[in-house]
Length: 338
Image (cartoon, rainbow, N blue to C red; front, side, top):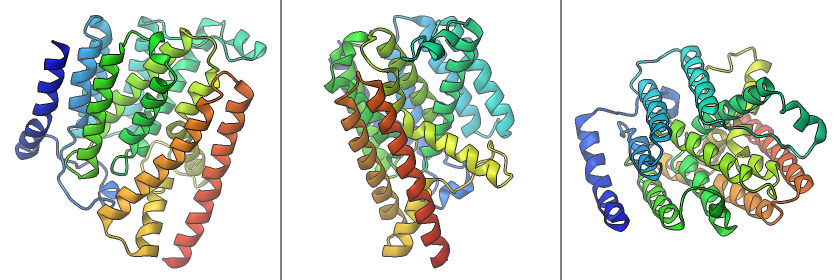
């Protein structure tokens, strides 16, 4: 029965996506600066729809859990449809939802491999604030990196494959078959995304990052042999993208909630386009592949030492330093050429 559902679902994704495109219900109209990185216009923000449907299937035994993913998806839809325009209102709604989500499902991280930090998390209020902030940084960081074809979907595919490779699925309520189905569907969406047939939109970005974050907390809490900083490293790219963006905007007296087109992946795209005179779509795809290849190397090395906190911290620091160096270096080159 599972196989029949999966095959039918895989078959109907493309025609449903074409129907959504023709109906013009979810046109890609969020962020005009983002559109400058694309080769085509009016691409449907339908990726989230296909993701939330399958997540609902994966979590169908827990009504309140799959309802939570649907509600958060709808929050993303309200942003995609421009029902919520204010970044402040959107952030407040995110925070309220995440607060309810982590409290209802008692999502916590208590052990940070440091006696002092772990003792702080024994305080319920501090523990709740910490996990809420983690989810907020992850979700908004994931939304930031959804600026190139295949970048976000490809990144989360890397995480899922690394988890499968290290047999971490046994610590979750998702079986191997369901995991393989999810991976295949995300890969198919990745192909469609690379070919600009669909985008995730805020709805897809919110849903995919919330599910992955919840999934990884589940993995860690059920296997204390894993360093919590390995989980942090798995999610470090979108998280650091967000943290660095906040710092960068504060430095130039800009609101951290206001979007711009100065993220690293966008600078790499501009560099490739100027330096090698590439077309938009080609520069977009190559930038995405380069960044995720870099992420794959870091995550693969870290996965070999998932028990060792010191190594994970070194990898996180090294990633951050390389990111900052590349950002400054590429920005200088672009500034000279423009």
